Amino acid sequence: MRELERYYRVLDLEPGASLEEVNQAYKDLAFIWHPDRIPLENQRLREKAQKKLQEINEAREKLRSLKTKHQIPHHSHHSHHSYNSYQPYQHHSPPPPPKKPQTKTTYQSPNPQSANSRSANHQSPNPRSTNSQSANYEPPKPNPDLSGKDFSHANLSNKDLSGRNLSYANLSGANLTDAFMHKVVLRGADLSEANLFRANLLLADLREANLRNTNLIGADLSGADLRGADLTGARVRSGDRLLVKLIGANLSGAIMPDGNVHG
Image (cartoon, rainbow, N blue to C red; front, side):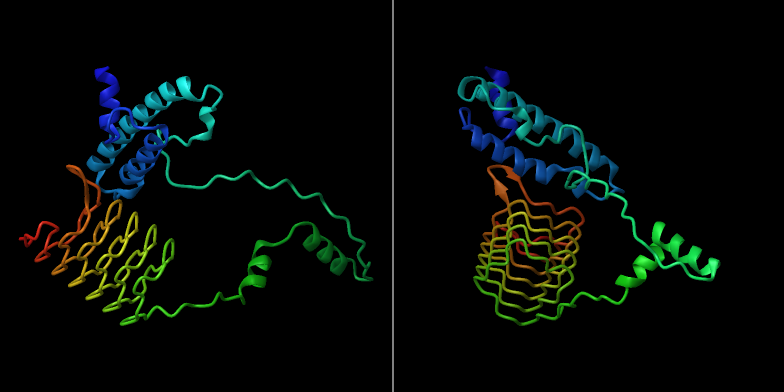
């Protein structure tokens, strides 16, 4: 029984939590502790994260096995993704079926050298030629300067805002769940009561930003500049567990969630 309670404790759950709660807790913690989210040069923390990930995976497997045995006998364990063996984030998809060779009747030029050249090009496409065909295509370039814009209570979930200039923008109450905001500039921006659950804010500029009562659970603020930012009342913990990544973040002069100023 003590071992069972330990598995619940590893997933930060109360004993008797449902299978859905077990799976959700596992996904949240696996996201936070995945070694890919730690800089390569910090080997000590990467090893710690890998060990933590193994503990999380073991706890989830033991609890899932117990619950499916009594509740869902025919449920297959293959329907759940496992992080037991450390793997980088990637999406797997089956390779496309090989294309059948196409035959094409070509005009026979009187010049044998010219005909052979065309035939060779038809059978073995030159990669450089393929690249040259798409070289002229340029995707539309978004305007990176959004400084001072009003995005209050906007739904920006899963948006890619990396590198954008959002300094002094109004993002109060905005939904930025799972947003990708690598190197975004949010200096002086109003993010009060915004939802930044699992947002990627690596190397973001958040100097003097208003983060009062912001949900930062699962957010990655590694390397971010938070000098002078106001995090009063921000959600960063679940119980006694810190659930925000602040590796290498500059918190000099920042007002922490408990109201104390970081030294």
